[in-house]
Image 1 (cartoon, helix red, strand yellow):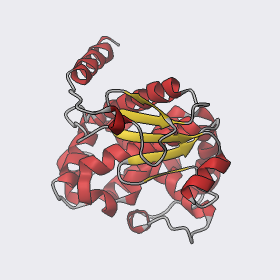
Image 2 (cartoon, one colour):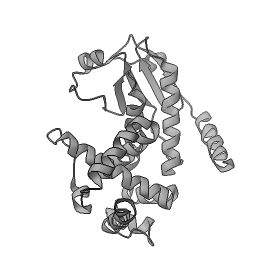
Image 3 (cartoon, one colour):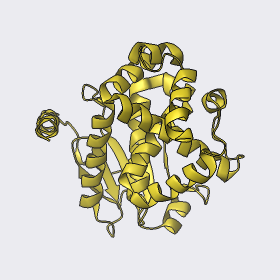
Length: 264
């Protein structure tokens, strides 16, 4: 507990040292000039006046800190604050963004757009993870959807007990019955043409494998793994570099996960 408090203090001190050179025009969003703003260490939130913008800002920083703790990415500093746009409701979100009806939020050019609902904090935890991981891994992030979606879904499940309950049911009744193979998992790229049940199965299995990696071997080894990918290592080499005695390849990781999480 003392170690966590100490790390949190370091985290806050590092945030306090960040200098801003933004004018008020930068803080407002040009696309939605009537939305209010709030700036924090890592985010600029723009929201409809009906939205509790302070809570959105506070929760976003909490999610950011949790991601740092789980990945040991404390040395990572975003190039600039991420922008979060929060519309007042689903209808406004769809009208203003022309998004597909099944989307609760999206990322575009290092900014998140969502709408306020009981589910908004689940969506933010997921999308903030994508922003951080994409910037850290740079071009490498697009080659490993199971890692990107796995970590994002893992953070979403930690943030929202109701989502975790639903996904745990999918894990027990679908994933454990017929999991994606290591090869299928590594090649799978979620598409709008896929069946919803297949996409959710992919998210749930990927998140469980990421959870297994972090909670079984610790966040420092997970950081070494991500850093290997960032440096251009193939996934097997990055795993061997980070987990030489445990997961020397994706197949070895899958086998160990299958033995401990599926069979048992």
